[in-house]
Image (cartoon, rainbow, N blue to C red; front, top):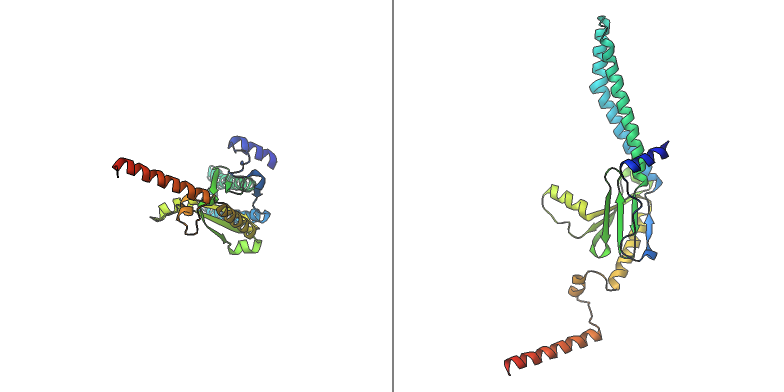
Length: 249
């Protein structure tokens, strides 16, 4: 039944196929998925929201309408049966919506991808709204791991990758900027391994001279090759000769 629902959602929501690897050597491509315990974590959150939703429905609709229906039923009102149907219908709708969200939750868990190459990473998540983010290693500024109490119990964590351009400003602008410049590996059980992999490839990228151009020029440890020095000397000699020809000096 779930597989039928999955195929229906994929057609209805036009969920894209598996993501292609980001820029880099495809031989070095590593694919990471959310841990099975992350689904249990999502189930806990779903159960909490469902319980709160049922409580709100019972307090706001079921109890008032049931009380009103009971009162009119005692008075012999024949149409009072319609009042009994209202809380029943509301409860059924609430149950159906919760089950639908549960099925979508499973699909969201399965459609979460983390792809890492030797030069960049790509993250795709979401079903109703698909969010795909590609980050070049040259733009990475910070890598951190966060883990809440429930995540510690389930032995999972979130890996956060911050990129350049976060900026400051108001809280609303800051939140939007964080979404655009922050990549999350959510619910993984090997956060330290993924962080170490990214850091190793980031160091390798910078050592090979393929990092940010401005960083390399500004770096005090940057060394010119012999060929580059020879080319600079030739340019200097030609510039000096051209200036002498123009000035006649």
